Length: 375
Image (tube, rainbow, N blue to C red; front, side, top):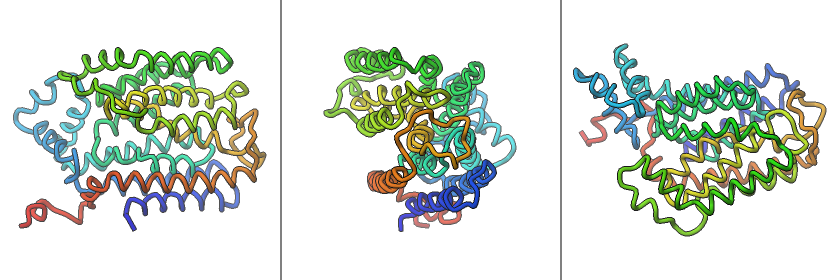
C-alpha cells in the first residue's frame, strides 16, 4: 500500500474510533483525538528527509543564512524575510536543517489542531478533507507557504470571533513568510457581512466581476509580483483546477444548510469558501492562483463538517448548533459513506498525479547524501 494512503487511513481510523465508537462524545474525547492525530501528522511529515522537491533549494538558503555573510542574506529584502530569519535562529542554536522541517510540520499540524478543536463539529471530516484534498502536501516541499497557511488558520480565529487585531497580526505575519498570503486581508470584511439576501447578491456580483475582469486583474497581479509574466497571461482551456469541486460544495451547502437561517461561524466560513471559488477561477492562467485560493479553500476543514453534521441532540456542540438543517442522522450516515468514498478516490487521484514527486519521499533514516550519488 502507498505510504501516503496509509497515512490517510490511519488518520481516518483514529478519528473514527474516537468520534463514533467512544462511549461519550465530549470535548475531552475530541481533544485527545486531535492530539493523537496531530502527533501522527507531525511525525509523518516532520521526520522525512530533506532530499525532496524544493527542500533542497531551502537547504541552500539555510546554509547561506548561516554563512559568514549571513547578514546580507537574511536582511537582503523584507519580502519573505520570515523564513530567512527562522533559518538563522535555528542555525544560531547549532541545530541542523532537519529541525526546521520538523518544527514547520509541527506548527502546521498544531494550527490545524486548534482550528478543528475550537470550531469543527467533526474531527473525522476535518482531517479527511485536509489530507484528501492535499493540503498536508505543502509541508513536504513548500515551507514558506506551509508556515503562512498555519498563520492564516490562526487569522481565521480572528475572523470568526471578530478579533480584528488578532486577524491583522496573523495575516501580516503570514505575509512575512509568503507575500501572497496577504490576499487573506479581504477575508475579514467579506466574511463578516450580513448573511441575508444582500450578501447573496454580493456573491453573484463578486464572481461575475472577477470573471468579466479576469484579464485586467491577472495583468495587475502579474505586473506586481512577476518580472516577466507574459506566459501567465495566456489562459488554458476549461475553468481550472478544483473550481467544479468548490461549486458543488457551495451548491450542496446552499441546499442542506441555507446561511440565511444561520448565526455563528458557519456563514463566515461559507463566505470564505465563496472567495476560494472566485479566486480558483483564475487557475486557468497559472497554478499560482490555485495557491492563492488555497489560503481560503483550506477552511473547507470547517466548512464540510459544519455543512454535513446532523442536527441531533446527542452532540455536544450546542453553541454552533445549526438553526435549520435537512440532514437527519440516517441521511448523515448515507452522506458519510458517499463522501468518504469520494475522498478516497480524490486522494488516490491526487497521489497518482504527484507520483513522480512523491517517489522521492523517504524518512530521515532511509536515505543519506552518499546513497543519492551511488557511493
